[in-house]
Image (tube, rainbow, N blue to C red; front, top):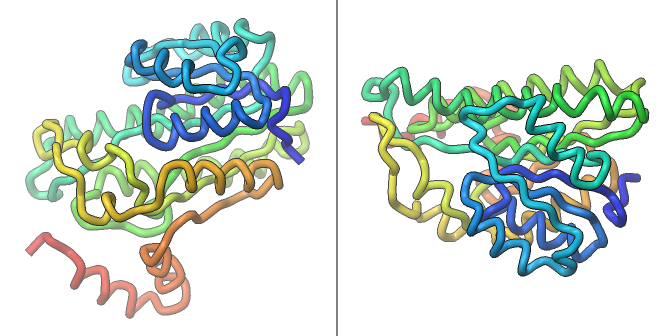
Length: 264
């Protein structure tokens, strides 16, 4: 059991949305926190909302261009170790394949896949030395299914799922656990900040996002799953049915997904 009390938890993308909700709830459960995001003022706002701000260290970082070893060293120096790494930072997409510039795909892969891989590799030596550690990878429902207008995002989150599964199989003997989290629609700024065909912001709260799960509910489900050492969590409403449909009726899934597409 990975109880949060007195654990040192490093959360990326902690300035808003799911990351912020994870930070606030972990603080209530007695954890020490290292919070990372690009915007220091927003990190300071989140720290002020925590149950015990004195147990919260801020480590601003741009995960699209960084030195993972140096950043991990700074994170570990805050409280002497990292017990739980939450790779939450990421960016989504709202554009058709035929229109999307290759540079957009590269930006998505750098932040959504290569950054969490780099940070995971950077914290592993210390976790393996202690034979204790937990890495939480925030994937998505699109870690399991492809989705129209999200070819790059689906690819990156599929990569995250494959990496997590393989890493878990390699490192369980070293005492390092991995949890893959696959949220569905959550009421965050994910669609507002999503990249368009040329890299511009989508700038719109999608209807399904606006009607999605509250970040606080998502965070509670995540931490409850982590504390129970769950290897994988699907946190979704009706959109989660697509995952089951693909598994048990792939032909019907394909038909339904095509009809749901806005690509025509």
